[in-house]
Image (cartoon, rainbow, N blue to C red; front, top):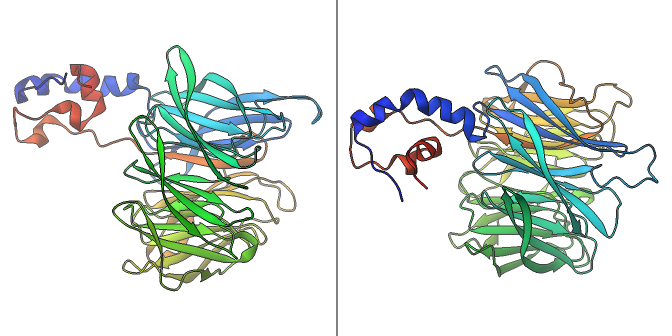
Length: 407
């Protein structure tokens, strides 16, 4: 039951509000979390994002080690990483060649942005991608069986438990997921024999209903990205050297954009993110290891290469691209040729140019790959609410809900 507060009482809670932020279990400032996909040592590194966009390592948690590749190590090779909508928990899926079972690992985030591993579970198949649907429902690909599966798990942190609530067949090589900003729809790739994008509606229980299937052949559809406004989806085509674009209808279904597939401006596009202002697509490439920007036509979704690029180095060394505010981040997973390995921070400028923020930041781990980004919600002060005694503070800020008993 929510508690309604009058404005004078709300003002007395302001000091406690900020203390609650520290206890709630989410980083109090912007942060990124990097999964280090090492064969001999897996780990996750937490970084604080400064006002100028530079990165400061907070801590690193080792998830598994082994002396040789022939030794089992379920905690090695954290391949993908995702953060809950409330910023409290992280999940990583591992691809450590421990068939037929692999591992999902879970971490709690503290107010200073540090992380602590709180649970890990053995799951069938290989969880090549993970994405939180809600704060307790996690979507996971299961790529070992044929057909591949998409699985929904319910996670309870205290005591830690993981319960499978839904399984759906999705194709012969389904390795990427993305959830709609509304949390109502899940998009799953299939770059196997029948190149297809599948769309599922998500029930509050986690049950999935297939509502759309869009063929993409003869083009691959690999990593997926949805614009923050929820109107556009892009899929990179790998060695087919295209970017596929789809408009998203109000019911979650897809329609190919006019002009899609768009010829790619680098070689083998493998990673993709949409800028936080919806204006630019950021594409990482496998063969030439570059990240490049393209402007997005806000009406049609069509892409125009801006001519701006950054070369990470060796072929295959670009691990991931993710955006946050006017920044974006790129991982370099190899020390070959140019020596540095870690994560780059860039400021995205008007026109799609970008400026590097400081030197590459070492994760301290092996083969940094996937990135999860976090920005805390705006803390609403009572004085900004015009002293409306009918305001439900729990609906405005989870910290206030925590203080007042709101749900």
